[in-house]
Amino acid sequence: ETGVTQTPRHLVMGMTNKKSLKCEQHLGHNAMYWYKQSAKKPLELMFVYNFKEQTENNSVPSRFSPECPNSSHLFLHLHTLQPEDSALYLCASSQVGGAGGPYNEQFFGPGTRLTVL
Amino acid sequence: GEDVEQSLFLSVREGDSSVINCTYTDSSSTYLYWYKQEPGAGLQLLTYIFSNMDMKQDQRLTVLLNKKDKHLSLRIADTQTGDSAIYFCAEMKTGANNLFFGTGTRLTVIP
Image 1 (cartoon, each protein chain N blue to C red):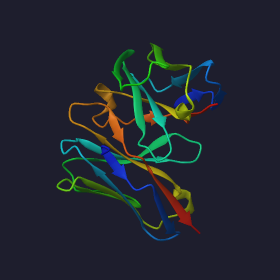
Image 2 (cartoon, chains in turn orange, blue):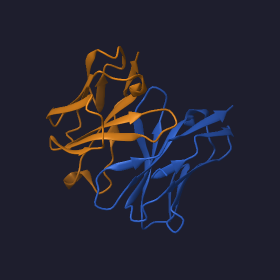
Image 3 (cartoon, one colour):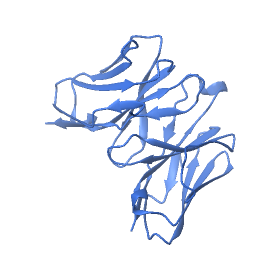
């Protein structure tokens, strides 16, 4: 595997289900991100992890719970979601500081298309 | 309003030039980026420009930055059907490592 991978690619769940999204980066980066992509809205940053520590939580409802067990893996645990949470969830990684260069290029996975019924 | 604003849709004919526009609000932004998202894929960095530059050219791509008006544009010369995608403008603000994205502009190239 290369780059950033996400599983599953598609997920349909009911409002009472619990599920998890998985992201893995094979780039040796030290920062990972969760974004929400909804139609006609800006790409919304949800969570940021630098060196496995959460540094951003942009007022995301508690029904979304991130987990970063190591610098290569990032999870998004979902429970009691609402239909308006249906969206494409993108994971990204980057190298912040050091050899990553000044421009912080973020590498994105293909996303998980989530549908909440 | 939103931090970064873009038009949602743009259609051009194959062979013409495309110009995708973006406005941002933070005059202290250090870097501004253009990302491309093809169907079924994540975003991929196309190009970026440092805030002390006015223009950057890379093959068919030209980025223009007007700091006074906080306006960024991406021009694609000789647009091809393979350029059909969603193009996101993003800014990195001073003192932050996070990127702030716009809504994306869906470019449709008509053969």
